Image (cartoon, rainbow, N blue to C red; front, side, top):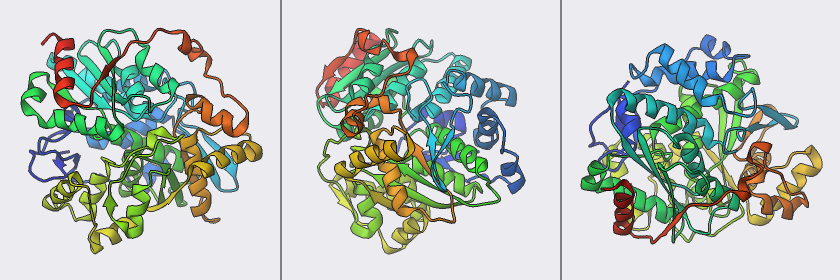
Amino acid sequence: MRYISTRGTAPALNFEDTMLTGLARDGGLYVPEEIPTLSADQIAAMSGQSYEDVAFTVMRPFIGDTFTDAEFRELIAAAYATFGHDARAPLVQLAPNHFLLELFHGPTLAFKDFAMQIIGQMFQKALGRKGERVTIVGATSGDTGSAAIEAFRGLDNVDVFILYPHGRVSEVQRRQMTTPTESNVHALAVYGDFDDCQARLKDMFNDFEFRDSVKLAGVNSINWGRVLAQVVYYFSAATSLGAPGREVSFTVPTGNFGDIFAGYIAKRMGLPIKDLVIATNQNDILDRCLKGQGYHKGTVHPSISPSMDIQVSSNFERALFDAYDRDGKAVAQLMNELSQGGFDVSQGAMQALQDTYKSGRASEEETSAMITQALKHTGELLCPHSAVGVKVADEQREEATPMITLATAHPAKFPDAVEAATGVRPDLPPRMADLFDRPERLTRVTNDLEALKAHINKALGA
């Protein structure tokens, strides 16, 4: 299995190097040269299997000879051993043919744990074998950062620096990043928004002298390993509802597009997915683009669903790559136009996107109303991101096809928004009950590449 860049000029890599590299040297994102498929019998056999067994079947074709079967099974077992639910990703019924996929039972209470925990295990195994140490730098709108820190804290071969927008994440999200005590993890509060953090991250990867000197690696959703790990729960959920014997649909609250792109990969692998629905909040650039209005950056408006407060959805580049028939030169041109403010999608590529994805949006008022309504009619407390998904799913779902909405975070990560909508303040799980009593450790930094590089070099003793 080999991986190629969406911009067409970086060298093809095997899985291990793709995972450890993250962003391609031409600025593109790595995707598989070919998408392996699973037979109907292989998919049907997943029904009733453990999440770990499903993960092995789904991910194994992508990893080549990076790990033996025995090694990979051990890594998967270690990754999900700390989850708070034996099903790992249980389904809850909200209404006739509408189901909620609970992806918040991991150590940081968000869907990012499904990918980050296995990435941490794979990094440690690969780096230990090589005798190497890397510097991981990530940008987060809230959940990726805490999941990355949790996955890599205390590991021998990794230093982790997480950039998050100062004052634009929830208090629970911030404290999950700033309270770990291990010396190899660093939380950096950047004066700016998430798009600023993401831009500086890409700047660091494109500064090859710095990148090589600190052995930079990335675990944002730009890392193919992250996307691959998220493909698993599409198979786990769909087979629980009868796939491959029946079609299912998914609605995914998304900002950076990685989670719904994982659904696209699942569909390409043979999972019978009817609709893949993109759910956006008031920062609705993806919804506007899918409705033919082009991809043009605007102002990021802070919301009660901060992990979706994004204007530059990095993984959308992967979707564009396929929509443009894998023309790396065309994608590179689009990304250059995006750096100038935005681009329009060609008619053929737009048709390809619309044939693959549907979309919808939820305003702040609609999001709060859905949190209220869900508790009243189902007894479920939804986090704001999950509420965006449920609202859009209700508009898009069809009676004949089960709809699965991804619940991306625990409501206790956003207690103020949930309490304002319901009068109920959700409690953190017992294992995190003392989170607000733990001392914080963070560094505030300006939105400046040289300042960030200087801080990282100093922290590494370089």
